[in-house]
Length: 118
Image (cartoon, rainbow, N blue to C red):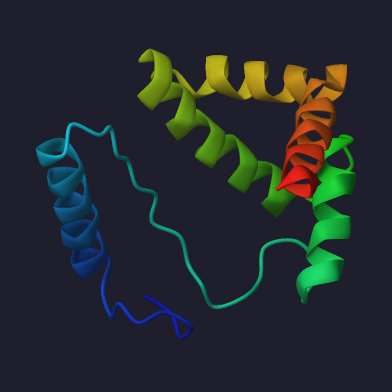
């Protein structure tokens, strides 16, 4: 692993991921993990408000390759957990279509409105 993470080796990261999955299963929860480097930020923004602005751009389909790759990997894991779809290409196409169609941005708006009500 690179600097920026508290886990020293890829093997240690895998062990932690497997442990988290085991804990999730013991609680009847579906859990997955992705190992990624933490030595530099994903995207171009650093700082809360700038990252939110970059997220909004991404939800509108304007994202850097590293952001797109991260969205696809995390989204694919979520699709795998929720409906068992393991094919990365199928998941990537579904995720990108939801973004292109505006449904992702619509859901984000709904989430923001729901938070304001609390």
